[in-house]
Image (tube, rainbow, N blue to C red; front, side):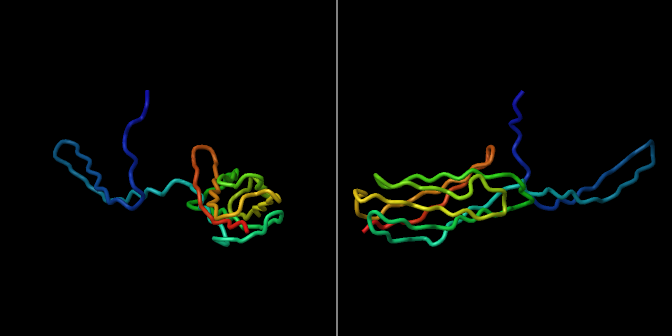
Length: 136
């Protein structure tokens, strides 16, 4: 059976609990604290790099831990121009961590600006971030 109930937003919720037995009524107040689910953040720097055809450039990919996330994150890149390759070192990474994305171009890689999309995935959680690559 699927659970289609909406998720409760993180936060503090005051509750009043009432117990009755015949004519006796007792109440107490408590606070229910709902914590956000573990997650990770993903960023890349610098936001733009220039490279001559046949050369390489590097970016730093930062994977942060949010709400106690302690999993591993696999990294991938898309949007590379023809003849270019992207290699992460290391991947996967355990958050919090950094990985270096090295983009190697070929002599025949087309000139122009390209938008690279870096994706991080861990189980059902995925995030992406972008950076610019200008091939000259």
